[in-house]
Image 1 (tube, rainbow, N blue to C red):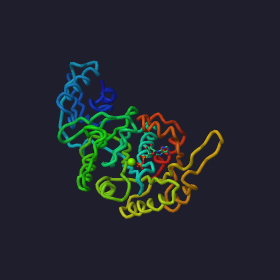
Image 2: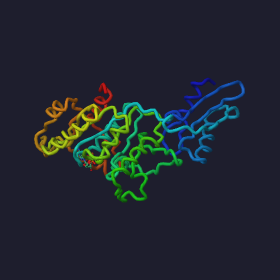
Image 3: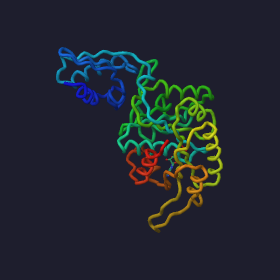
Image 4: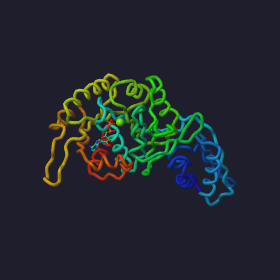
Length: 326
Ligand SMILES: Nc1ncnc2c1ncn2[C@@H]1O[C@H](COP(=O)(O)OP(=O)(O)O)[C@@H](O)[C@H]1O
Ligand SMILES: [Mg+2]
């Protein structure tokens, strides 16, 4: 048995409380193989005692030579375990334009390309990510580190909604506490190895987006707008904020562009003529997609089955994100 073989076996051992493997969670610290022993050192970050025990058992039963295996645990800071490729924030000046939907679809698009993805729901007072994915599991963990649950397709999710006693509980905190919570979601969550972390921002240019841009290494922003004139105006405020914070805009996305009515084979411009091309040009970023109003999307969101949405536009969004030079 060589090191590569041990790693590929550990990649099949799921960390309790997450849907991801020990390797993907980046918890394997060291592997030493000698004639007598296979010593595996695992980071215990976020793992409570019973989880460590069951993990030890799964490691031992995953390898044929179970008597040779010695598992030890080492507590390391979350910062050592987290290896996040790119942080992408989804923003708009306005509420209800579909930021959360776009954050969800972007994560789904990247996941379908075989990438490792997480979503940090930074909308503390109006969290909507867990509902779209039908996830209710409470994050497990220790005092200093917690494990984000995963969606059906393996997207890690962290949201205040997963921590509230009831989904309908209101969060009525002031700015500093909201900022602290977002920072905790970044610093204390065991995200492990991710290619992309998508951050779903609340509307506007208030404390929460500011915290995200100041405290998180945001690589790029996806700006969402609708054809409405009012949206165009408030989106420009958000664009100015991004410029001020020196965060590049990776792409723009027009949501609720039109409604297609199959019975008459016509596109109706419910919110007015599209200005997607002008918006993209004036912001100076590529247009990722124009999403129609789609009753199926609304239904899938409500039923927590967004991952089942099939539309070539999803591939377009994914392609736009990975091919961006940001
Ligand atoms: N293109 C669309 N077609 C159908 N429903 C949509 C579309 N975009 C958004 N919605 C619905 O509109 C509501 C608001 O979207 P959401 O993503 O929560 O907005 P925001 O995060 O900007 O406040 C959600 O219920 C969502 O399912
Ligand atoms: Mg939202």
